[in-house]
Image 1 (cartoon, rainbow, N blue to C red):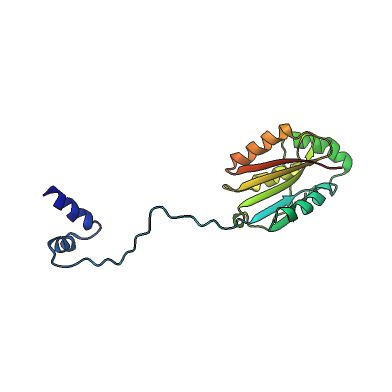
Image 2: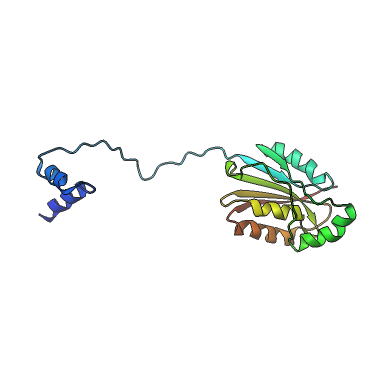
Length: 186
């Protein structure tokens, strides 16, 4: 008896009571127009597009970004341009201090929709053991849910301290650092 009521009410969930009673008593038949999809469907893996961004003061990082982006099969390579005009002396003094303090600098607007890309590759120079201020501004733009690969360029600097700080900043924004590579130039 209880089993009959259970079947009756579960079969008729979402219908008005008159229609449910008519189906339960066999007066009318229920149309089965709905097709159920299996709960576990295989997710089709699509090719994730790759976006590469780079900032280069003296063209070393630019050269590396262009070389590596071919190997990494990047879909779009964009240069980050800082609004502030810097000299070599400025980079070595106040630029390095700004980098160490994780300060941001104003950059030109980026004409790209980050949502179109699953992987974001960043090529950045190391100033005073930390990313250049322009790249700190870029890190702030990265949306949630992206895979980020970092390529740090330096002549002889050590990016060990920077690796943790930069990765933490990206993870705070809800993205995942999948690769961190220290590249020596020169």
